[in-house]
Image 1 (cartoon, rainbow, N blue to C red):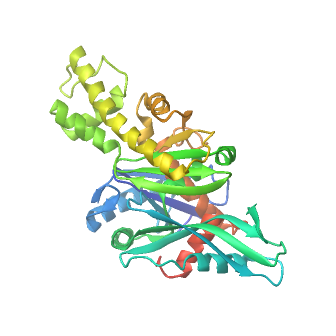
Image 2: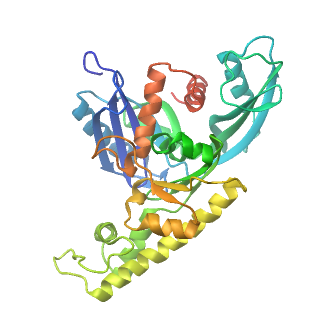
Image 3: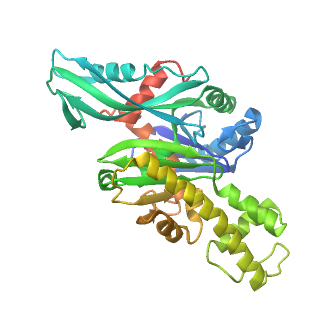
Length: 390
């Protein structure tokens, strides 16, 4: 429960490397954090839950940390996850109108867009409206209150593996948390770090996690397509551990200190220093793996954008975006302007690793106050009503 006079809302980011719970005071600006909890992930592999009990313990610990700071017990959250194996199906459906369009028409169109034949092992996570069409006129952002003989919707239907989703929801439930809404971080993170002008000009959001990387493309203000790749920062750490014959913990620290350009000053776990030759080897290992990842990201962006202009370039976010020298190398490989996307909130709670959690908190606040129809929150609302999230 929240403290008297408060409406505390929570976002839970379930990652391969870490669980993050961010609570904000819903009665104030969403920029005001009430508490944050971060714990290393357990029971996760490449963004998927492989051990429900272990994942549940990590989630509960992060939730308790955030709740203690906010003076509450976190028992409800909007949940984001990497969504490895996510697939997007594009749909265009329409209906005849007899009056001005209202919210029931929007919900009916979303229901029509959901009617997609899928393999038995897959199910729909959410429907994201891209644009509306009134009597053949494209590019309508909000049709509410407008008259037309025919109203159509172009929507992206996000599908995921049913078994993976069931395990994730079960882990959250075992942690004692009710799921109020659910989305993939490839979409959620953009809510916290992308500017509307970037979406209009065309931009690729690259959400770099521990075990996965989400690539999402926007153009003309619309969500175009997304894919989650099974590569992430943990692969760099693993390469360093093998190449240097050190533990994963030490390799992670070396990666953090070195980045893509540091050649000296690295300290070993025993207090000694790496030689210049060792430092060059470290950077070489990191660069080789990053080059491989960026080549895959570039090919994915080319495929998802399908020739559309990405004038605003690429925005890097997620914990992997903290790697020193990554923006410069990414710009060279992609041939695009690149920046690191951070939530526009006071330090130290504005790192790129918190982008998804802030995006979830923003969705939760919109739902709390029943603000004007927003595509993703409306899609989430439908998921809740359909009985998927109990």
